[in-house]
Image 1 (cartoon, rainbow, N blue to C red):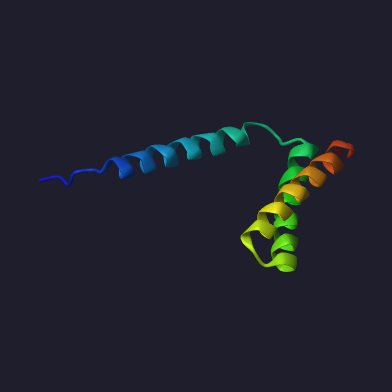
Image 2 (cartoon, one colour):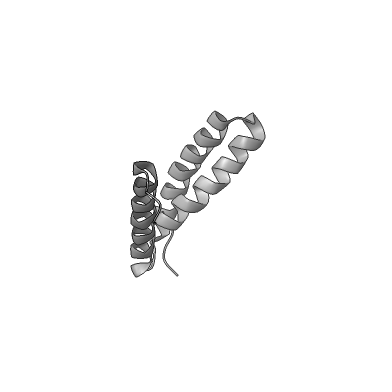
Length: 80
């Protein structure tokens, strides 16, 4: 006998497969400076927000602010 899959497990499996496909699709080309700046800014902002405020709201707020700042800095950088 095979175990029955619950709807939650099926949805989780589909969501994981879709996330993996999107992640691999993102590797199809080299990221722009703005995209790299956004990622780096979000990580750095999240770390600073967590260190300063010590809460989830501080982490998310810091990540959002860092992403915005990183995007703007990345747009202004020339590709080397």
